Length: 486
Ligand SMILES: Nc1nc2c(ncn2[C@@H]2O[C@H](COP(=O)(O)OP(=O)(O)O)[C@@H](O)[C@H]2O)c(=O)[nH]1
Ligand SMILES: [Mg+2]
Image 1: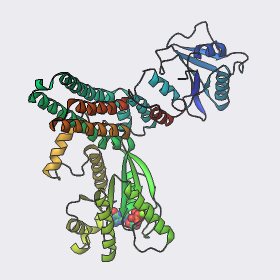
Image 2 (image 1 turned 180 degrees about the vertical axis):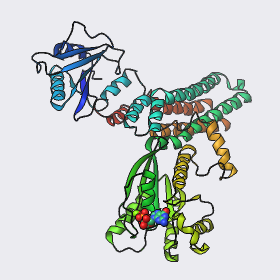
Image 3 (image 1 turned 90 degrees about the vertical axis):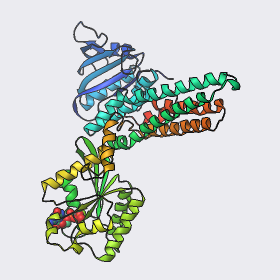
Image 4 (image 1 turned 45 degrees about the vertical axis):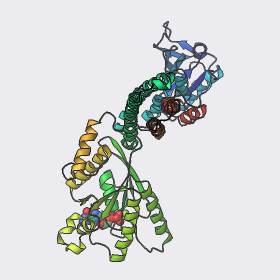
């Protein structure tokens, strides 16, 4: 692998108080020796920071900089690393970078520092991925999950599961060495039990991705319903901003409107849609409906707003077709019974709450008025509960099952949301299938060497997560998503 000396700014472009240029590689020290003149007699020692200025001949004293030196292997990349903190003006940044490149470094590619850290054993692949998550985190819980992964939270669990499978494999290989007559039925049974346990543990880990994905990517909430039911008002209330235009003219919102917000430290992507009217011949309105339907397809949760007065029969049927389609696609729907302040005066047949309970008795609903702070608070709490437990029911208003799930998810608090990357989840899923196959083969009385093959394949799958056994192509793919300077 090419280990020449690389350099790039780790701070973003644009004017800033300071900018940090990072140089990594075996020539980092000599490059800095040539370029910088110490401002006192103290020289950079490992992990020391000293003031310098650019040497004559290299833009001559253009800036006062601080040079931080991290000697190999005690650095981010495991190589000699020098970090130059200069002033963050465009001309100064360019001067410092040009001089470092002229002195022998080459520009670093995306993620190249982290790639070197990975190859030098400073971090495994899950930690490298977490670095990017740390940088991209918009909400507290995202940052927490990234930090847990960065500090080995995911690797530790993967290693535990791997050790367990290696234990089973060792036992299997011992049996392989024995003559067939020596095999006792209890040997097989014991192994079956062990593999059952391993499969269960891996499955739990895979299940943690349901919450983990939402923590890392944010919860996609889409507001849907007929025109004029109060969808845009709901978006504005939840986001605390006057983001979408509200009016009593049906068809005001013609495009999807998106806004990101955080609730209790969780990231939520909220999308308001054009009202799902029927038979529109306005091409813009029709396009709005196509976009609304596309948004519904990507939703983790749909807030379906029903407000008085209920629309006429044919419109209601059309809406039901849409609701049923979302349900068939496995979407979670919460009915928001809007304009609750107007409901008092309604007869039962005009009341959306009555209609929702009659037509969809199993779907959760909540009343809502834009006039009520309590309603807003309740809705926010419901969304947070959905992220944390995957359920819309609270233990009080929900069934016994919902209450039981609540207890279970608290008991398993350690693994909740542990897997946040689809790549990890896919590998664990594959490992589950292979362990399952190994167990079934054992139970079917198949030979031990066949069972061992499946177990080894399961171990290989798990090792791709931490990067112990991973292709160059995958590594390139992962690090190419990094930014330059990281
Ligand atoms: N009384 C009452 N009016 C509301 C409420 N929410 C929205 N509205 C009004 O209903 C009309 C339509 O609201 P809007 O949010 O634009 O509906 P959309 O077409 O579904 O996006 C506006 O005049 C809002 O002021 C509510 O909770 N109570
Ligand atoms: Mg609207």
